Amino acid sequence: MGQDGHRWSTGRVCSSHPVRVEVLDELVWQQVQTLIEQPEIVVKEYTRRMDAKKKEDSNYETLLSKKKKEIRMQEQQKERLLDLYQVGTLNLAEVEERLKTLRLRITKLNNECPFESRGKNKSNSVCSLLNSSRILRKDEFKPTKFEVRSKNATCSSFGQRGRC
Image (cartoon, rainbow, N blue to C red):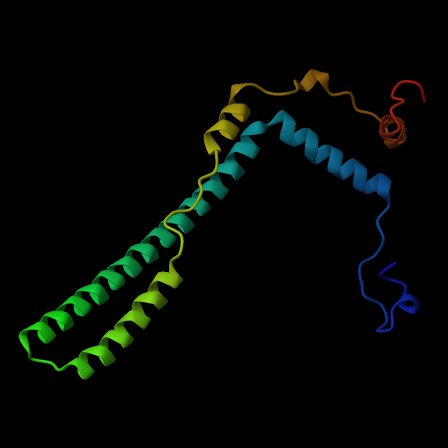
């Protein structure tokens, strides 16, 4: 539909060519078989993604600790201002102005890091599922033609598997 220029006011929206479902289905089925036969591929990709997530979390934790340090420094500066006022070094007008600025900075910093920690994924359960056993053995694959798989999928979607 995206290739039909007459359907859209701006002309064609898709420049790709159509692909026959039989060809695409065979390619997808081969890839699925490969992944089921070799779960280490899935584990390797999963591990790569989890490592990237850990690195991202590490960067987040570093940023969070820097923001917390800035907040502590602003709080200490606020305490020093109050101490200077109590000693009589600064007058009330100067302290109020500076305190207002400090409070705004502290609020801004607190808004920049609202969450203390991120939720962690249950990576161990997925890895143990993949490593514990293979879901299907290689000999359980029965190569079938597209027409048969398509018919089974159509029949099973209507709850008539085996009766079509």
